[in-house]
Image 1 (cartoon, rainbow, N blue to C red):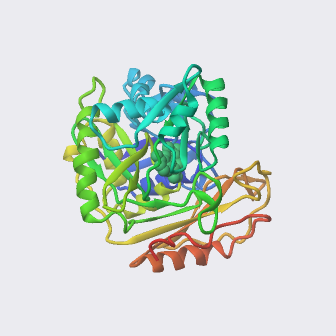
Image 2: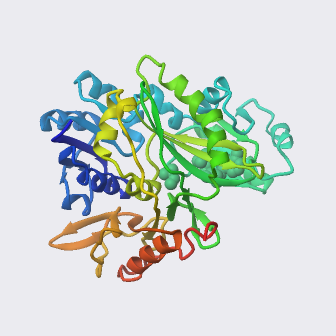
Length: 416
Ligand code: AMP
Ligand code: GLY
Protein backbone atom coordinates (compact mmCIF):
# COMPACT_ATOMS: atom_id res chain seq x y z
CA UNK A 1 0.00 0.00 0.00
CA UNK A 2 1.37 3.41 -0.89
CA UNK A 3 0.44 6.84 0.39
CA UNK A 4 -0.70 5.60 3.80
CA UNK A 5 -1.74 7.77 6.70
CA UNK A 6 -0.93 6.52 10.21
CA UNK A 7 -1.69 7.51 13.81
CA UNK A 8 1.03 6.72 16.35
CA UNK A 9 -0.19 6.59 19.95
CA UNK A 10 2.21 7.77 22.65
CA UNK A 11 4.62 10.59 23.32
CA UNK A 12 7.99 9.21 24.40
CA UNK A 13 11.32 8.34 22.84
CA UNK A 14 9.83 5.13 21.46
CA UNK A 15 7.13 7.01 19.59
CA UNK A 16 9.59 9.55 18.18
CA UNK A 17 11.68 6.61 16.91
CA UNK A 18 8.55 5.08 15.33
CA UNK A 19 7.66 8.40 13.68
CA UNK A 20 11.22 8.80 12.36
CA UNK A 21 11.06 5.30 10.88
CA UNK A 22 7.64 5.96 9.36
CA UNK A 23 8.86 9.29 7.93
CA UNK A 24 11.55 7.31 6.07
CA UNK A 25 9.01 4.79 4.75
CA UNK A 26 8.08 5.22 1.06
CA UNK A 27 4.67 3.68 1.87
CA UNK A 28 3.73 6.43 4.34
CA UNK A 29 2.59 9.92 3.34
CA UNK A 30 1.06 11.30 6.50
CA UNK A 31 1.93 10.79 10.18
CA UNK A 32 -0.18 11.78 13.18
CA UNK A 33 0.91 11.34 16.78
CA UNK A 34 -1.09 11.51 20.02
CA UNK A 35 0.05 13.18 22.17
CA UNK A 36 3.58 13.22 20.69
CA UNK A 37 6.43 15.47 21.82
CA UNK A 38 8.64 18.24 20.42
CA UNK A 39 10.46 15.72 18.21
CA UNK A 40 7.36 14.16 16.67
CA UNK A 41 5.99 17.68 16.02
CA UNK A 42 8.76 18.15 13.44
CA UNK A 43 7.67 15.20 11.30
CA UNK A 44 4.06 14.51 12.33
CA UNK A 45 0.94 16.35 13.43
CA UNK A 46 0.55 16.10 17.20
CA UNK A 47 -2.92 15.73 18.75
CA UNK A 48 -3.97 16.01 22.38
CA UNK A 49 -6.38 13.39 23.72
CA UNK A 50 -7.81 12.38 27.07
CA UNK A 51 -8.78 8.70 26.84
CA UNK A 52 -9.10 5.68 24.58
CA UNK A 53 -12.48 6.69 23.13
CA UNK A 54 -10.91 10.05 22.22
CA UNK A 55 -8.22 8.16 20.32
CA UNK A 56 -10.84 6.15 18.43
CA UNK A 57 -12.62 9.37 17.39
CA UNK A 58 -9.31 10.87 16.33
CA UNK A 59 -8.36 7.84 14.19
CA UNK A 60 -11.82 7.89 12.60
CA UNK A 61 -11.84 11.64 11.94
CA UNK A 62 -8.35 11.58 10.47
CA UNK A 63 -9.31 8.57 8.33
CA UNK A 64 -5.96 6.96 8.99
CA UNK A 65 -5.13 3.66 7.29
CA UNK A 66 -3.91 2.16 10.55
CA UNK A 67 -2.92 2.94 14.14
CA UNK A 68 0.40 2.07 15.79
CA UNK A 69 0.17 1.68 19.57
CA UNK A 70 3.30 2.75 21.44
CA UNK A 71 2.56 2.05 25.14
CA UNK A 72 0.72 -0.93 26.69
CA UNK A 73 -1.91 0.93 28.73
CA UNK A 74 -4.30 1.82 25.87
CA UNK A 75 -3.98 -1.74 24.53
CA UNK A 76 -4.93 -3.17 27.92
CA UNK A 77 -7.89 -0.77 27.89
CA UNK A 78 -9.13 -2.13 24.55
CA UNK A 79 -7.72 0.29 21.94
CA UNK A 80 -7.33 -2.45 19.30
CA UNK A 81 -10.74 -3.96 20.11
CA UNK A 82 -12.51 -0.63 19.70
CA UNK A 83 -10.61 0.29 16.52
CA UNK A 84 -11.62 -3.09 15.03
CA UNK A 85 -15.28 -2.11 15.47
CA UNK A 86 -14.56 0.92 13.25
CA UNK A 87 -12.64 -1.26 10.75
CA UNK A 88 -9.38 0.51 11.54
CA UNK A 89 -6.42 -1.89 11.70
CA UNK A 90 -4.22 -1.59 14.76
CA UNK A 91 -0.57 -2.54 15.24
CA UNK A 92 -0.91 -3.75 18.83
CA UNK A 93 -2.95 -6.64 20.24
CA UNK A 94 -6.52 -6.76 21.52
CA UNK A 95 -7.05 -6.46 25.29
CA UNK A 96 -7.33 -10.22 25.87
CA UNK A 97 -3.81 -10.67 24.41
CA UNK A 98 -2.40 -7.49 25.98
CA UNK A 99 -2.90 -9.33 29.29
CA UNK A 100 0.43 -11.00 28.53
CA UNK A 101 1.89 -7.75 29.85
CA UNK A 102 -1.03 -6.63 32.03
CA UNK A 103 -0.91 -9.74 34.23
CA UNK A 104 2.34 -11.52 35.02
CA UNK A 105 0.37 -14.49 36.35
CA UNK A 106 -1.54 -14.77 33.08
CA UNK A 107 1.76 -14.61 31.16
CA UNK A 108 3.14 -17.41 33.34
CA UNK A 109 0.07 -19.55 32.67
CA UNK A 110 0.35 -19.03 28.90
CA UNK A 111 4.05 -19.91 29.03
CA UNK A 112 3.29 -23.06 31.02
CA UNK A 113 0.59 -24.15 28.56
CA UNK A 114 3.02 -23.68 25.68
CA UNK A 115 6.02 -25.31 27.38
CA UNK A 116 8.00 -22.05 27.20
CA UNK A 117 11.01 -21.97 29.56
CA UNK A 118 10.61 -19.50 32.44
CA UNK A 119 11.36 -19.34 36.18
CA UNK A 120 9.36 -21.53 38.59
CA UNK A 121 6.97 -19.54 40.74
CA UNK A 122 4.44 -19.49 43.58
CA UNK A 123 1.23 -17.48 43.61
CA UNK A 124 0.74 -16.07 47.11
CA UNK A 125 -2.51 -14.76 48.58
CA UNK A 126 -3.67 -13.75 52.04
CA UNK A 127 -3.87 -17.34 53.31
CA UNK A 128 -0.51 -18.48 51.88
CA UNK A 129 2.43 -19.62 53.97
CA UNK A 130 4.86 -16.87 52.92
CA UNK A 131 7.79 -18.26 54.92
CA UNK A 132 7.50 -21.69 53.34
CA UNK A 133 7.47 -20.10 49.88
CA UNK A 134 10.53 -17.97 50.72
CA UNK A 135 12.30 -21.09 52.01
CA UNK A 136 11.54 -22.83 48.75
CA UNK A 137 13.57 -20.28 46.77
CA UNK A 138 16.24 -19.51 49.37
CA UNK A 139 19.95 -19.47 48.52
CA UNK A 140 19.44 -16.87 45.77
CA UNK A 141 17.92 -13.40 45.72
CA UNK A 142 14.12 -13.47 45.95
CA UNK A 143 12.14 -12.15 43.00
CA UNK A 144 8.73 -10.73 43.89
CA UNK A 145 6.39 -9.50 41.14
CA UNK A 146 3.10 -7.67 41.49
CA UNK A 147 0.37 -8.93 39.18
CA UNK A 148 -0.68 -5.49 37.91
CA UNK A 149 0.62 -2.89 35.46
CA UNK A 150 2.95 -1.00 37.80
CA UNK A 151 4.92 1.19 35.41
CA UNK A 152 8.23 -0.57 36.03
CA UNK A 153 7.82 -0.48 39.83
CA UNK A 154 6.18 -3.86 40.29
CA UNK A 155 9.26 -6.05 40.72
CA UNK A 156 11.61 -6.38 43.67
CA UNK A 157 14.76 -8.50 43.43
CA UNK A 158 16.42 -8.70 46.84
CA UNK A 159 18.70 -10.80 49.04
CA UNK A 160 17.03 -9.28 52.10
CA UNK A 161 14.40 -11.75 53.30
CA UNK A 162 12.50 -9.17 55.36
CA UNK A 163 12.36 -6.78 52.40
CA UNK A 164 10.98 -9.59 50.21
CA UNK A 165 8.43 -10.50 52.87
CA UNK A 166 7.38 -6.89 53.34
CA UNK A 167 6.84 -6.37 49.59
CA UNK A 168 4.89 -9.65 49.39
CA UNK A 169 2.59 -8.55 52.23
CA UNK A 170 2.07 -5.05 50.78
CA UNK A 171 1.32 -6.44 47.33
CA UNK A 172 -1.19 -8.98 48.67
CA UNK A 173 -2.77 -6.10 50.60
CA UNK A 174 -3.18 -3.90 47.53
CA UNK A 175 -3.65 -6.49 44.73
CA UNK A 176 -4.97 -9.62 46.49
CA UNK A 177 -2.10 -11.79 45.22
CA UNK A 178 1.56 -11.66 44.21
CA UNK A 179 4.11 -13.86 42.42
CA UNK A 180 7.27 -15.16 44.03
CA UNK A 181 9.65 -16.33 41.33
CA UNK A 182 12.82 -18.41 41.35
CA UNK A 183 15.89 -16.29 40.59
CA UNK A 184 17.32 -16.85 37.11
CA UNK A 185 21.07 -16.25 36.85
CA UNK A 186 22.47 -15.06 33.53
CA UNK A 187 22.59 -12.13 31.14
CA UNK A 188 19.50 -10.32 29.90
CA UNK A 189 18.56 -9.48 26.31
CA UNK A 190 15.45 -7.98 24.71
CA UNK A 191 14.05 -9.76 21.69
CA UNK A 192 11.28 -8.12 19.70
CA UNK A 193 9.06 -10.28 17.51
CA UNK A 194 6.63 -8.65 15.10
CA UNK A 195 3.79 -11.09 14.52
CA UNK A 196 0.29 -11.62 13.20
CA UNK A 197 -1.97 -14.47 12.12
CA UNK A 198 0.17 -15.15 9.04
CA UNK A 199 3.73 -15.18 10.38
CA UNK A 200 6.42 -13.51 12.44
CA UNK A 201 9.67 -11.57 12.05
CA UNK A 202 12.36 -11.47 14.76
CA UNK A 203 14.08 -8.09 15.02
CA UNK A 204 17.75 -7.82 16.09
CA UNK A 205 18.14 -8.57 19.81
CA UNK A 206 19.24 -5.71 22.03
CA UNK A 207 20.35 -5.04 25.57
CA UNK A 208 18.86 -2.37 27.79
CA UNK A 209 20.48 -0.80 30.90
CA UNK A 210 17.73 -0.45 33.48
CA UNK A 211 19.68 0.84 36.49
CA UNK A 212 20.22 4.54 36.99
CA UNK A 213 23.99 4.57 37.53
CA UNK A 214 27.12 3.22 35.87
CA UNK A 215 28.03 -0.36 36.70
CA UNK A 216 24.30 -1.21 36.82
CA UNK A 217 23.91 0.36 40.27
CA UNK A 218 21.15 2.45 41.80
CA UNK A 219 17.43 2.47 41.27
CA UNK A 220 15.55 0.73 38.49
CA UNK A 221 14.52 3.04 35.63
CA UNK A 222 12.54 2.67 32.43
CA UNK A 223 15.91 2.25 30.70
CA UNK A 224 19.00 4.49 30.56
CA UNK A 225 20.31 3.33 27.20
CA UNK A 226 20.44 0.35 24.88
CA UNK A 227 22.37 -1.15 22.02
CA UNK A 228 21.86 -3.73 19.31
CA UNK A 229 22.71 -6.31 18.18
CA UNK A 230 23.52 -7.85 21.58
CA UNK A 231 26.51 -10.26 21.31
CA UNK A 232 25.05 -12.49 24.08
CA UNK A 233 22.35 -13.41 21.56
CA UNK A 234 24.54 -15.72 19.47
CA UNK A 235 23.27 -17.79 16.53
CA UNK A 236 23.03 -20.76 18.89
CA UNK A 237 20.97 -18.81 21.45
CA UNK A 238 18.83 -17.46 18.62
CA UNK A 239 18.09 -20.97 17.31
CA UNK A 240 17.07 -22.13 20.82
CA UNK A 241 14.96 -19.01 21.38
CA UNK A 242 13.06 -19.50 18.14
CA UNK A 243 12.48 -23.21 18.74
CA UNK A 244 11.57 -23.02 22.45
CA UNK A 245 9.90 -19.62 22.75
CA UNK A 246 8.98 -17.85 19.50
CA UNK A 247 7.52 -20.82 17.59
CA UNK A 248 5.26 -22.11 20.39
CA UNK A 249 4.13 -18.59 21.35
CA UNK A 250 3.38 -17.69 17.73
CA UNK A 251 1.55 -20.98 17.16
CA UNK A 252 -0.71 -20.17 20.11
CA UNK A 253 -1.15 -16.41 19.57
CA UNK A 254 -1.76 -16.68 15.81
CA UNK A 255 -4.52 -19.22 16.27
CA UNK A 256 -6.66 -17.12 18.64
CA UNK A 257 -10.01 -15.87 17.33
CA UNK A 258 -8.36 -12.49 16.85
CA UNK A 259 -4.66 -13.24 16.29
CA UNK A 260 -1.88 -11.30 18.00
CA UNK A 261 -1.09 -8.34 15.75
CA UNK A 262 1.82 -6.22 16.84
CA UNK A 263 5.15 -6.71 18.51
CA UNK A 264 5.80 -9.14 21.33
CA UNK A 265 8.71 -8.01 23.51
CA UNK A 266 10.41 -11.07 24.92
CA UNK A 267 12.60 -10.22 27.93
CA UNK A 268 15.17 -13.02 27.99
CA UNK A 269 17.59 -14.33 30.60
CA UNK A 270 20.35 -16.34 28.93
CA UNK A 271 22.15 -18.71 31.31
CA UNK A 272 25.77 -19.88 31.25
CA UNK A 273 24.88 -22.75 28.90
CA UNK A 274 23.27 -20.36 26.42
CA UNK A 275 19.78 -21.55 27.35
CA UNK A 276 17.13 -18.80 27.10
CA UNK A 277 14.36 -18.24 29.68
CA UNK A 278 11.53 -15.71 29.51
CA UNK A 279 11.69 -13.07 32.26
CA UNK A 280 8.72 -11.08 30.96
CA UNK A 281 6.55 -10.38 27.97
CA UNK A 282 5.56 -6.88 26.91
CA UNK A 283 3.01 -6.22 24.19
CA UNK A 284 4.82 -3.23 22.69
CA UNK A 285 8.25 -2.04 21.61
CA UNK A 286 10.70 -1.44 24.44
CA UNK A 287 11.76 2.08 25.29
CA UNK A 288 14.71 2.72 24.65
CA UNK A 289 15.10 -0.57 22.68
CA UNK A 290 12.84 0.83 19.95
CA UNK A 291 15.23 3.75 19.34
CA UNK A 292 18.03 1.35 18.31
CA UNK A 293 15.97 -1.43 16.70
CA UNK A 294 13.96 0.63 14.21
CA UNK A 295 17.08 2.19 12.60
CA UNK A 296 18.44 -1.32 11.92
CA UNK A 297 15.42 -2.11 9.73
CA UNK A 298 16.45 -1.47 6.12
CA UNK A 299 13.09 -2.17 4.50
CA UNK A 300 9.91 -0.08 4.68
CA UNK A 301 8.79 0.17 8.36
CA UNK A 302 5.30 1.43 7.44
CA UNK A 303 4.75 -1.59 5.23
CA UNK A 304 5.79 -4.01 7.99
CA UNK A 305 3.63 -2.41 10.70
CA UNK A 306 0.64 -2.08 8.38
CA UNK A 307 1.02 -5.70 7.19
CA UNK A 308 1.09 -6.94 10.79
CA UNK A 309 -2.06 -4.97 11.60
CA UNK A 310 -3.85 -6.82 8.74
CA UNK A 311 -2.44 -10.38 9.05
CA UNK A 312 -0.33 -9.91 5.92
CA UNK A 313 3.12 -10.16 7.46
CA UNK A 314 3.97 -13.41 5.66
CA UNK A 315 3.96 -11.59 2.34
CA UNK A 316 6.11 -8.72 3.61
CA UNK A 317 9.86 -8.88 3.08
CA UNK A 318 11.79 -7.38 6.00
CA UNK A 319 15.49 -6.60 5.68
CA UNK A 320 18.08 -5.37 8.15
CA UNK A 321 21.22 -3.25 8.02
CA UNK A 322 24.43 -5.03 8.96
CA UNK A 323 25.22 -2.25 11.46
CA UNK A 324 25.34 -1.49 15.18
CA UNK A 325 23.19 1.02 17.01
CA UNK A 326 23.39 2.61 20.45
CA UNK A 327 21.21 5.09 22.25
CA UNK A 328 22.06 6.93 25.50
CA UNK A 329 19.28 8.51 27.56
CA UNK A 330 19.56 12.04 28.96
CA UNK A 331 17.48 11.96 32.14
CA UNK A 332 16.13 14.84 34.20
CA UNK A 333 17.53 15.67 37.63
CA UNK A 334 16.45 13.06 40.22
CA UNK A 335 14.97 10.66 37.60
CA UNK A 336 13.72 7.92 38.27
CA UNK A 337 12.31 9.83 41.25
CA UNK A 338 9.98 12.79 40.80
CA UNK A 339 11.31 15.43 38.43
CA UNK A 340 10.67 19.09 37.75
CA UNK A 341 9.34 19.73 34.25
CA UNK A 342 9.74 22.86 32.15
CA UNK A 343 13.53 23.33 32.36
CA UNK A 344 15.05 24.80 29.21
CA UNK A 345 17.13 22.61 26.94
CA UNK A 346 19.77 24.12 24.69
CA UNK A 347 22.60 23.18 22.34
CA UNK A 348 20.73 20.21 20.87
CA UNK A 349 22.99 19.15 17.99
CA UNK A 350 21.77 18.70 14.42
CA UNK A 351 21.15 15.19 13.26
CA UNK A 352 23.09 13.41 10.52
CA UNK A 353 22.18 10.19 8.66
CA UNK A 354 23.99 8.14 11.31
CA UNK A 355 23.49 10.11 14.51
CA UNK A 356 20.47 11.94 15.82
CA UNK A 357 18.60 13.01 18.94
CA UNK A 358 15.40 11.19 19.91
CA UNK A 359 12.96 13.31 21.85
CA UNK A 360 11.18 11.71 24.82
CA UNK A 361 9.94 14.11 27.55
CA UNK A 362 10.08 17.38 25.59
CA UNK A 363 7.75 20.16 24.54
CA UNK A 364 8.08 23.60 22.91
CA UNK A 365 6.67 26.73 24.52
CA UNK A 366 7.12 30.17 22.99
CA UNK A 367 9.78 28.75 20.72
CA UNK A 368 11.83 27.35 23.62
CA UNK A 369 12.52 23.62 23.94
CA UNK A 370 11.62 22.48 27.47
CA UNK A 371 11.90 19.26 29.46
CA UNK A 372 8.57 17.53 30.02
CA UNK A 373 9.34 14.21 31.71
CA UNK A 374 11.91 12.00 33.41
CA UNK A 375 13.63 10.67 30.34
CA UNK A 376 14.07 13.81 28.26
CA UNK A 377 16.12 12.92 25.18
CA UNK A 378 18.13 9.98 23.93
CA UNK A 379 21.07 10.30 21.58
CA UNK A 380 21.42 7.58 18.99
CA UNK A 381 24.41 6.55 16.88
CA UNK A 382 24.56 4.06 14.01
CA UNK A 383 27.92 2.62 12.95
CA UNK A 384 29.98 -0.21 11.48
CA UNK A 385 30.95 -1.31 14.99
CA UNK A 386 29.44 -0.89 18.43
CA UNK A 387 32.33 1.42 19.40
CA UNK A 388 31.61 3.55 16.36
CA UNK A 389 27.92 3.76 17.30
CA UNK A 390 28.85 4.60 20.90
CA UNK A 391 31.27 7.34 19.84
CA UNK A 392 28.55 8.95 17.73
CA UNK A 393 25.89 8.77 20.46
CA UNK A 394 28.20 10.20 23.15
CA UNK A 395 29.49 12.94 20.82
CA UNK A 396 25.89 14.19 20.66
CA UNK A 397 24.86 13.87 24.28
CA UNK A 398 27.94 15.73 25.56
CA UNK A 399 26.82 18.88 23.74
CA UNK A 400 23.35 19.19 25.25
CA UNK A 401 22.64 21.59 28.10
CA UNK A 402 19.85 20.79 30.58
CA UNK A 403 20.47 21.77 34.19
CA UNK A 404 20.68 18.85 36.61
CA UNK A 405 20.45 16.25 33.85
CA UNK A 406 22.45 13.03 33.94
CA UNK A 407 23.34 10.10 31.70
CA UNK A 408 25.30 6.86 32.00
CA UNK A 409 28.74 6.80 30.43
CA UNK A 410 28.94 3.01 30.21
CA UNK A 411 26.11 1.98 27.89
CA UNK A 412 27.19 -1.19 26.09
CA UNK A 413 29.90 -1.99 28.66
CA UNK A 414 29.24 -5.75 28.48
CA UNK A 415 29.83 -5.80 24.75
CA UNK A 416 32.59 -3.20 24.33
P1 AMP B 1 10.28 -7.67 34.83
O1 AMP B 1 9.43 -6.45 35.04
O2 AMP B 1 9.53 -8.96 34.99
O3 AMP B 1 11.05 -7.60 33.55
O4 AMP B 1 11.42 -7.61 35.94
C1 AMP B 1 12.27 -6.48 36.06
C2 AMP B 1 13.71 -6.92 36.16
O5 AMP B 1 13.89 -7.77 37.30
C3 AMP B 1 14.20 -7.75 34.98
O6 AMP B 1 14.64 -6.95 33.92
C4 AMP B 1 15.33 -8.53 35.61
O7 AMP B 1 16.51 -7.77 35.68
C5 AMP B 1 14.84 -8.79 37.00
N1 AMP B 1 14.18 -10.09 37.09
C6 AMP B 1 12.88 -10.36 36.89
N2 AMP B 1 12.61 -11.67 37.05
C7 AMP B 1 13.79 -12.26 37.37
C8 AMP B 1 14.16 -13.59 37.67
N3 AMP B 1 13.26 -14.60 37.72
N4 AMP B 1 15.45 -13.84 37.95
C9 AMP B 1 16.36 -12.83 37.94
N5 AMP B 1 16.07 -11.55 37.68
C10 AMP B 1 14.79 -11.26 37.39
N1 GLY C 1 13.18 -0.84 28.36
C1 GLY C 1 12.33 -1.80 28.94
C2 GLY C 1 10.93 -1.71 28.56
O1 GLY C 1 10.56 -0.97 27.66
O2 GLY C 1 10.11 -2.42 29.14
